[in-house]
Amino acid sequence: MKTERAIVIGSGFGGLAAAVRLRARGYQVTLLEANEQFGGRASVFRQDGFVFDAGPTVITAPYLLEELFACVGRDSRDYFSLMPVDPFYRIKFPDGSCFDYSGDEDQLIAEIRRLAPGDVEGYRKLADMSRRIFEVGYEQLADQPFDRLSDMLRVVPAMLRLKSYRSVYGLVASYLKDERLRQVFSFQPLLVGGNPFRTPSIYLLIHWLERKWGVHFPKGGTGAIVAGLVRLLTELGVELRLSAAVRRIEVQAGRAVGVELENGERLACDLLVSNADPSIVYTRMLDARLRKKNTDRRVSRVRQSMSLFVGYFGTRGQWPDTAHHTILLGPRYKQLLEDIFERKVLADDFSLYLHAPCRSDPGMAPEGHESFYVLSPVPNLLAGIDWQQRADAYFDKIIEHLDATELPGLKERLVTRLSIDPRTFAGRLRSAHGAAFGPEPRLTQSAWFRYHNRCDDVEGLYFVGAGVHPGAGLPGVLCSARVLERLVPPARSPLPLPAPGLQV
Image 1 (cartoon, rainbow, N blue to C red):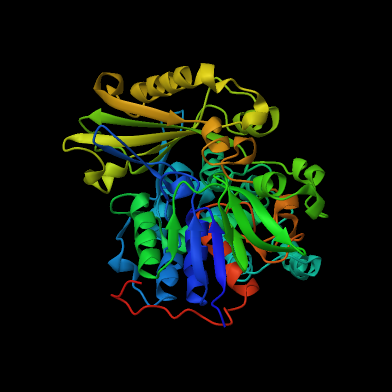
Image 2: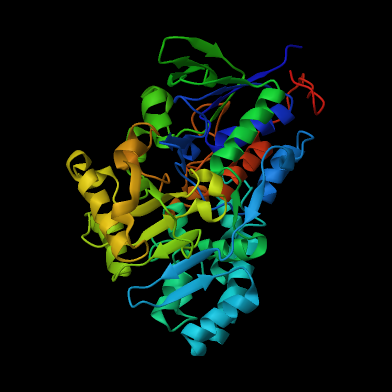
């Protein structure tokens, strides 16, 4: 029998992981990337000697990466190196106080006691609830398909017991009285595109996930992990193609049989996996006549996540007291989130995430210099903000704020800068409305309510990545490739894996 061919659309972490797992199951795999480099949101910018990770910088649940290499007989440590980050985050408040968010329980309790002694016992109860949510929401459900309503109904009793009908902020606030600590332990949904006041409390599992496995950073930046996965796929004989954007998915007798590229080339396959945004795939790559369930009308009702403004900049000199991950909270919390998610306006104030990778790896910048990126959550393109006119001024305003707070003297020491905004997510990254994380993780857009990992309309078409269960974030997209293994059978005539050290 001829070995079955699988095509993977997109080389974000979900697509890279899917390609590895499909190859482990014996398929002949072709990976198609629309852009000029692999990685999707995890691509890399290099400018004036500085290295900037374009997207994800917080690496959690590293066992998922280790497992990915192990499933094809490799050791991830031969491909990249992870370094623990401590504290996980340093959170700074507008009143001048700060909080070091650590994975060490004694240190964490000491920080809580320093800031709000009366909340120590409340935190212990909150952490226990986070652990219980994690044991169900992550350990039991994160790699399970939810493409049938019965899958959802089966877990409803457990979700009710764990108060998943409450928001993350609401559940946190029921345990903690200090408003600063409420913000510290409720901001995590923003890491996956959610509003803590709207995201269901099952996402409180992120706290325990970080406690359990820590926060890490790869030597050379997140791009080093992408490079390691690309090297692995090359060794496994996977065909890797850049600048290969898909125009259309070809369907015969209700089954995906190949793709047509934007240059007109056609590629046949027995199995198709998409790491692209499902909203874009359904409305642009599949004929409307083929879609009984994911119609244009249904897709238009999907509520997309917020977007991001990310400024990258390199400097002369260094700020050694700045933590690797710093969160600079603004004067408003709930009101700012309402501006971003509900009112969709670009507020005058902001809360920022500042990434200082040279704190862990000085090689990310020339000697005696630092590379940074600063991230500000902003509304997606449905807000109608003219980023062509406003992007530079917005970046200037952020630089002014950093100069006055975390990075004194920054303006005089800038060497280079560049930025991305919702236009980048809509254009280069092909995301609906420029959303940075796919559908917003609300209760009505989680598990069975989210886009399904197996296409409802076309046989042989599957999805991985932020748009499907279990959702955005590095653990989420890697778990979506795990879900794929539960849906896709092994190749009937498997292509053998080369032995370690050999390259196909």
